[in-house]
Amino acid sequence: MAGYGAAAHTGQIGEGQSIAVFGCGGVGMAALAAAKLRNATTIIAVDLDPKKLELARSFGATHTVNPDDGDPVEAIKALNGGFGADVCVEAVGNPKVLEQCFYARDLAGTVVQVGVPTPDMRFPDIPMIDFFGHGGALKPSWYGDCLPSRDFPALVELFLQGRFPLGDFVSERIGIGDVEEAFHKMERGEVLRSVVVL
Image 1 (tube, rainbow, N blue to C red):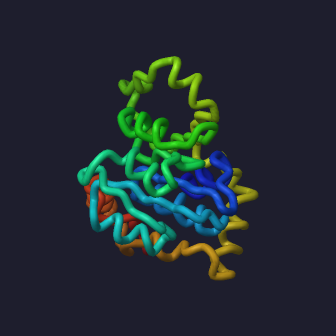
Image 2 (cartoon, rainbow, N blue to C red):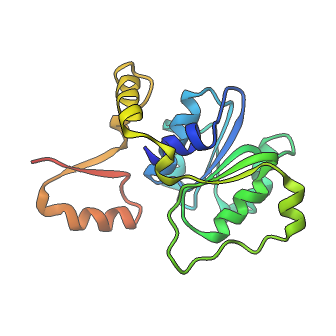
């Protein structure tokens, strides 16, 4: 829900627009799927893990960028004809990644932070002239600005119509005794989501 809402509600990604999603865990994958659902044309997945980038294509990514291969900001601009993306979603919870999102978006574009930071993290050191000169919007996205009573039924309906791949987010089914290890797998980036089956 958080990633879907970050792209669809907070970022308001729309038909024909471009989006760059930084971080391809469960939240980032949901943002990619939302962008595909809303007919964005350039959907860029950004992650350090080649396996996640490969998986991102199945969730709607039209392009992938690995920051280990070079500056992700320049790569995103190159994929958008020299301009930034209309929407950049930060799904990591990291100040450096948020700064990359800021510079990777187009003038008057939108940056959405849905990645949860730790209490000690600080906003990136962005010169005020850059903040002013880029225009647009910087938006935090608490749980994707979703309303469960509105959005859960809508996502279920989209799933039943075959338009949103909810089932693809389930990496494994586990017993109640495997919950702790499942959290460790998620922290290591080995799974998108583990589902407890009783």
